[in-house]
Length: 345
Length: 233
Image 1 (cartoon, each protein chain N blue to C red):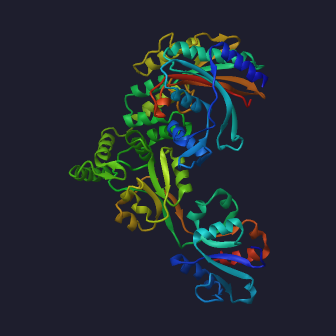
Image 2: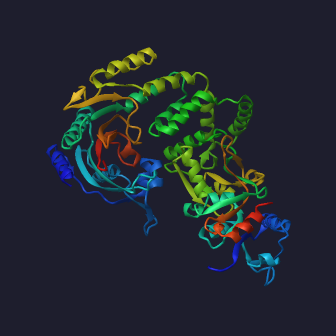
Image 3: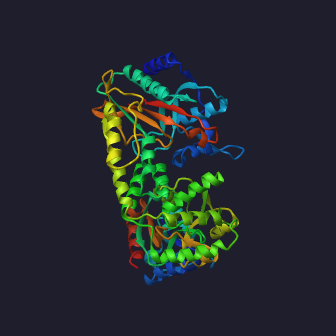
């Protein structure tokens, strides 16, 4: 409680306003955030047969609260409370205490990203943790790299970006790219014959919810860009990219050398990252490519603060920038950046 | 229901019933009914098994009743066991998988979806529904749990699983769902309804009839003895 009060004080001093969040949300809203989360929600049907869920996480509730305000102004909120999720692992708890802060309508990315991280460091300073590490990454770099890979089909590029946050499935996709090939010559001939027949039918006719037109479009797209042996080279680049970890001061250099070596037309400027010092108040700062893979809606800068608790490293604060969450929830596209404390440590 | 009887579930209808009853015949266990053909209980003529009571039920009820302990054991179907609630499944052990009642639980798509041959395709198509139609891709099935597990393990999250208790294969034609997960043996019904099997990894489960027992009941000597007899064939 004491700790929470001190966090409140810090956030208020930085101009954040405390908000109260609804305990329930329409299930569809959560689902639009991510299909994954639905299975973990506690839901019921109200008298109008609308599916309602206990809030599965507070940042989603905060985003909905902001959207309801229908404002174009920049808003800085903080909140605390309980989130409810069905446990997926044995040690997980169904009720999680969360404390977070967000900046909505954050147009000056660099400045607001820096503010969120600096606020996190100030909060960290109020705790007893020592030997902490701040890790910074940016999903924009990963997406840009994927889009510039010469041998991957656009279908696979989309898939890899979409599933970046689901590590196991992402690795399975990479494996698939390395080992299997789309083309089964006999089948292709047969399918092309069928496709030609289908082209003569009414293209607006719907089969299983899809028009013939969209089925054939996707089929043609698949035929144009099959998976083949050249994908292996790109997979190697992706794997090597995800291994990059270095001091933040060297990050742009290391990344630019990597892109140059792999003939990727991408340059990271020296002032790209919101933090450019290797050490802030005894917290060492690193760049890590393989970061931000636990939250599906992050789109740009991601960070985490690692502390040593019970002799092992644990993430105490994490956060990042998200551009598409509100649009996916059915509202206007809004830039936002936020962070949350893991109060269970 | 607490009684001194050993309660055994037996499928009450169809080909599965005939095959299940053959197991009793092979073991020279003659079943008789006290109140005629429509009686839902049966007994065994052999004096050694006078305390065995047969319950004629649907395969789904057999699984549920074995799980809740109403039945000590029963002949049911693997797909129904795997699709039952976790608290039911955890109380049941499979004693034997029989050769009869074989079928496959399959992912069935409209036959003109020639662009969709594997789960990764299906995952991509699910996003097409989400972006273009502003809704989730719908799968009609009687096997909600197994379908959900399969989708989750293949990264297909943008789906809505719709319960269907009959004529499931017609769901895409009726506009009730976009694709179907259902049991198939010969695929005749699927073909007649313009559906095809998802070529790569489209079989969710190879099922057959099973002899299953309640984990507590099987500890009783008499139940164990009778179950052992049924599992011989």
